[in-house]
Length: 341
Ligand code: SF4
Image (cartoon, rainbow, N blue to C red):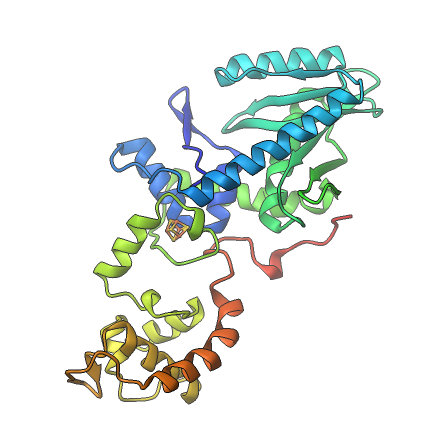
């Protein structure tokens, strides 16, 4: 699991771009983070092997970019990790000196702070002099997604406070070796809306519950969520079920796998074939214990070829619609602003 703990500064929660990205993916993860910060208790699970490999690759990508900059002969200042205040002070000094690149520059204002991968000098006047800076982030991804834009936008806002002028662009060094450049004005409203929503949640958290999303695979709270789904006999444990399908079933009063497995009536607004498949998969998930409302001494209510047909028919249609999406946050296809160059 790739995890950065939520921090406090001066007795207040210090929000970072990572916190914002996590919140955009899953509000439940932020609820757990906050609970840990404020009340202590159960720690998230340690990194698993896949997460450690990803993390190592991410660091290698960042180091390779740093090495490339150094090889170019242009000066780079590295800010050594310490307290946020000390690092922010050292970063301001490096920016005032007009150094070409600052690696791991710390930026902080109000509730927000963090360490930007790179700050790059550009020939655009600011309060610092005849120059100013733009944020460059390194990401292993092949292309940028809405969530990944949040990080450079948040750091660019903080950078504007230091240099007295908003940067025009931010950059993402992709895993392909290509650079994606975004025009910050195109994303400012999207990012600020996400920031205000997170600030509101931190000030007064609303009730949340774990809902599977694309972040679960690398989430430190995954065991805790799975325990919840198991304890509740949740519909989310039905293989390949989509979030929208769970909501529709719950609205109709079907809230557990057992209830779905023994369902004997139609659900308004759900195609009969789809419902049939979901019931079949719920029966498989409950060990075939519920067939037509009566307990059966079978381990699987479907013959193998029937089960294979159900999975063949069901999986391709359901998966992209639900499980690949984010949690109930802001990062969805319809909210992906245009403007990446
Ligand atoms: S495991 Fe998934 S649902 Fe649970 S907190 Fe993490 S991202 Fe959210």
